[in-house]
Length: 257
Image (cartoon, rainbow, N blue to C red; front, side, top):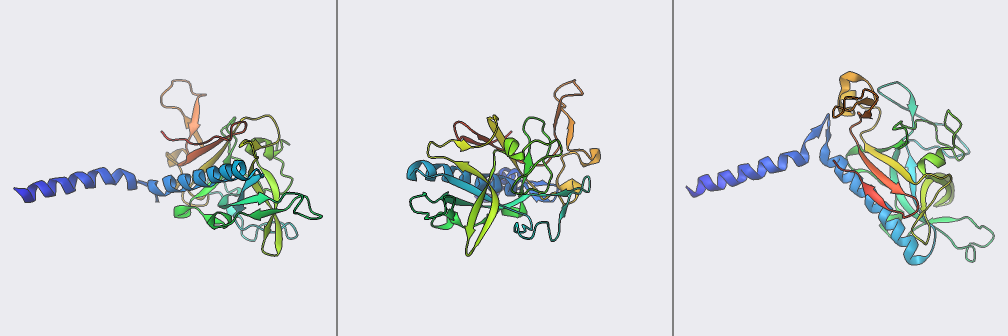
């Protein structure tokens, strides 16, 4: 009898555990959840550092196959499996602070890694990456990001993403890398007037469609919202977890269903 009770408890625990590690295509849901938590932690730590030490503090992002400004372009561009476009994604993040001008000597714009592990670039769990999305249009921003990026429509991507490019000191190199910057008040320094910015934690864009789309048969980033009858009401078809940033408050939010 006791053995049956133990077996029933084990079966119940197994049933509860399965959803946590359920697969989304070839990816584990837990990888996306862990990656979104990692991103949230890095952003939150940068905001706390900025308000505690009263210095501009940036979450600096490393792009796929990044090439220095002196050698622009990609050695091996990432090809989107849906539309075959060349795309850029974020694969790692680290925290840097702006050295006060009183300590920077002749240079007024020097960014150094924060002490400890936070200053080291870390990739996201399970090969997850960050896609760049315009929250106003739900469209992905797929372009070759550079220190002065512009979208096809001519809009400055920094307005859409809330990012700036910072000269990050890496060893004896200085690389211009995209970043979200928190100021000592805890808000985000960003161009334009947008209040909300968004990153998508997702599988890499070059994996098979069943590994990145909820409905791969549609071969579309957007699909009609099944909860409404309006065909123009679209929702994302991407397997992803959005992470939102709010300019004025510096709030960071992981969007969960």
